[in-house]
Length: 89
Image 1 (cartoon, helix red, strand yellow):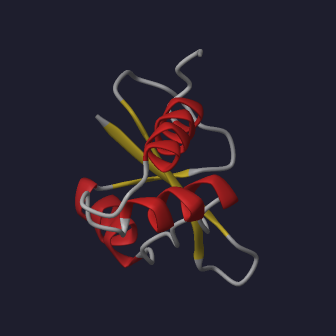
Image 2: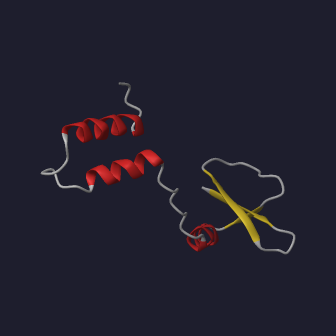
């Protein structure tokens, strides 16, 4: 495996790449696996996307216990699950 980094004008690393085959990467500097791993480990955890209106409604429907969810709400929840998971209805 080969590892490469790209630098910002100030000398800091802007991004890294890895290739499983010999490959020359223009404008990049070859680095070690340790340097590559250190850069990846320093990245912040990505923020999860905000829930969609359908996801919020589904959470609302499912927050009730099964004893109080109505039949129309069950059907609505099933339609929302189908929509969220790309299941044609």
